[in-house]
Image 1: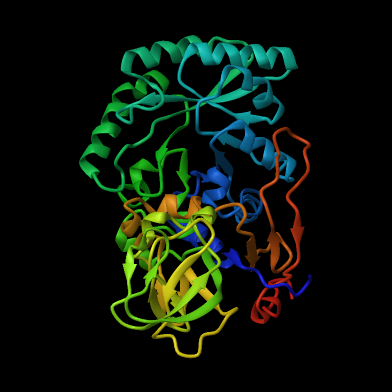
Image 2: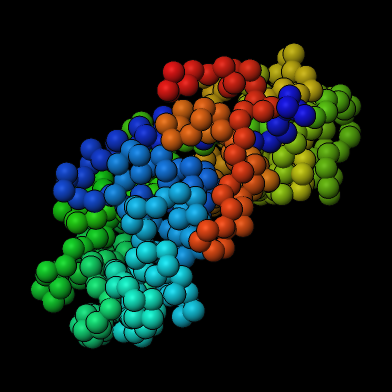
Amino acid sequence: MKDRPLRCWAEIDGSALRHNLSVVRSRIPQETKLVAVVKANAYGHGLVPVAKELVEGGADVLGVSNVEEAAELRAGGVAATPILLLSACLPGEFPQVIECRAWPTISTYEEAKRLNAAAQKSGRRATAHFKIDTGMGRLGLWGAEAIKELKRSEKLPAVGIEAVCTHFSSADEDPERTEEQWRELMRWRPHFADKPLHVANSATLWRKTVYACSFVRVGLALYGLPPMPFLRRLLRPVMSWKTRITLLRHLSAGRTVSYGATYLLRKAQRLATLAVGYGDGYFRALSNRAQVLVHGNRCRVRGRVTMDQTVVDVSSAAGCKVGDEVVLLGAQGDLVIHAEELARIAGTIGYEIVTAVGMRVPRIYREFLSLPQGSRISAKPNLRRTGSRQPRLSTSEGLPDRSRNARSPHA
């Protein structure tokens, strides 16, 4: 079993993650704190391993979506780093927020009261960040109503409102709208002039330096996904996604491929079946349109992507054989498939491509200073309460020889 090859896996590059972290750091003032956003399983890269690497690299705060993710971080050994919850909490979640020592984002006095009650019951004091809506229309209240709720919340005995924030709706594509939102926030700034402020995300960092306030919230750029095209040359993709050929066949002209017979061979082709499908997160929308990398060649998907298998034309990939590695996302030789390429085909964004990579796809961690070289997380654990079991890690069983023999950063 030890030498059993992986059928479909994602490789997570710690050196690329640290590189991107340093690029982000170079864009913000020294006194500004970095909130490294690791929600949604660190954008599909693995919550606990990525969070630990970012903390070791100097991230000041970790940003997650909800208290379940905060509990997973605490259970996984992230003990001291502050955790900011970026989504609204349900009423019954505030006791666990206190238990996890997390900072919730609140928008109303009612939320603050629930947090205050949970804090008083636990005998602790809670820290929260207060969001004001300036045009995102998702969390926060508008203008004077927000200020009224903030002032009421500040009077609660067991809650400290430690920062005020807003969220830009179009930072990656509309600098004028972003500036309008900034001016709206500054209009009300005198009412909370004594409090730290945060507004900036990955895209905003490359708009105006004034947006880098007390904190910046950075997710996309850390994973090497450029919020604007020109950043491709500065950032390095952290995830590569690979699979293997499970079967090779020669099909003659006139044959069809996969469900619905949507692909008709107009000439004879050599077709490879791959061990990946939409059950792994390889979108059905990529059917008949996407390409993969085989032996340094771009090879087209033929027919519909199915739940567990995908067929590609490998007529141009001379010498390929069953068991060979195929790149779905990432580099092979001089060729690269970026998340943005798959996103364009699927009619989505790069965020969704990487976060959709399923949890039956093991993550292999390379060049992580906080993990043994080649560590593998086989599945996402059920960490629904602080103190639950930690992710199952193993060494690089089933990895290609070059992965097992890669030089450890500790060597």
